[in-house]
Amino acid sequence: MRNKLLMTLLVSALALGNSGCLKKMILNGTIASTRIGSGAADTIGDYELARSAASAGLLQFEGMHRLSPDNEDALFLLMKGWAGYGYAFAMDDYEAANLGNDESLAEYHKKRAKLAFDRSISYGLELIAKEADGFKEATKNAETIKAWLDKHFDDKEEAENLFWVGSAWLARVNVLKDEPEYVAQLFVGVAFLERSRELNPEYMAWGATSTLAAYHARSPMAELDEAKKLLDVALEKTQRKALGVQLNYARYACAKSDQALYEKMLNEVVNTEDPDPNLRLQNTVAKRRAKRGLTKQAMEDCGFMAPSPPAPPPAAAPAPAAEPKKSP
Image (cartoon, rainbow, N blue to C red):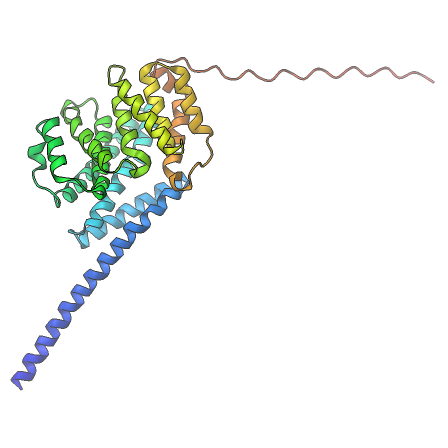
């Protein structure tokens, strides 16, 4: 009797253990499938639909991470998701409020953008820590972070994680460009993007190359020759289908005080129709910003004169007067 009871308890314990393992396997499989399917969002050209989907997706990914905190796919989805949300939506709102001279609204959206990039960087560093220790010690200067990245990251697949951390890092500095403690650490994001570009330059439609070009065109005193070289490479490699490259080219033109080039690049973004179905979302975001860049306020911020509105068409010639009727 005692042996039967012990056997029953043992079987029950094994069943409960197997049930827990099975649930974990199902959850991990769901998260892996979600990561694979998440690329479908890139094909959506409806900005408002994408905004709603991104918000809902982030809440789902946070729940997945809570249930499986060590799952690397969940960490990746959160790192990428928060970076994308911050750039495509929170930053878009911030820029629109700035151009509208609404200081309180701009401050609100600035905080939203910072929180998004903070969260992306936090999850990204947690993910990267699974590959290498010593990040904090490596951030002493540009040479130490480069050496650390070169030593620990040499696989093409690792370019993805480095890209999203670097992109979120630079975007956060852009939002907080008036805060010296963040600007002083700009080199960290640059190093991440440079290593990502070395490992897999084609990732995200030559995204690291284009983002680094924008960094080098950050001011008239920056490395404008390097910016142009990178932008020309990105334009050629993407066949001008990733409109964010032309948008960054306009930023270069702004720093270069070249109004003709500025308008040319932004008008190309606005007028190009769906060049690549797999880049619809990022191209939709680029179009929104290009239209905003052609407004009077944005052009004056670059030191340009806003283009004059097109002249109205000439008035139609008056119809000839009818001949008076002859009396019979």
